[in-house]
Length: 108
View 1 (cartoon, rainbow, N blue to C red):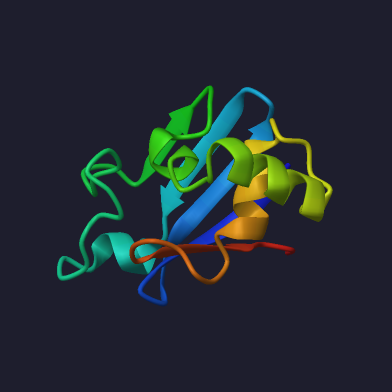
View 2: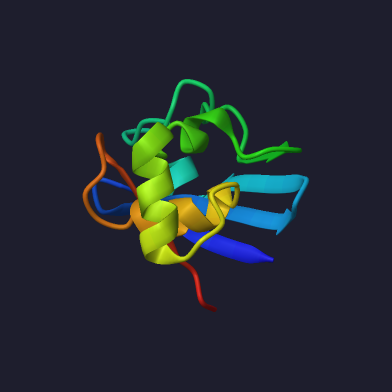
């Protein structure tokens, strides 16, 4: 199992979990979910429910990954399988992303 903390503009928004190759969970943190002034992290993950489950990496997070040659280069440099989308996301979405969302590996 691998976990990442999801931040929106430096506010902890929730947690993304890869339970296994075909089981992903995104869960809003209690404080973020209950704060009506904070928006959902995406239109596809509205704050109408606190936990979402999927058999594949949620499209919102998948679309944060590079494509084509850039993904191949990142995979080689980081020594991560090109098809390990969660691993690539953990390594490439830490700091400088397009938009307000960043992810940090959760080592707890």
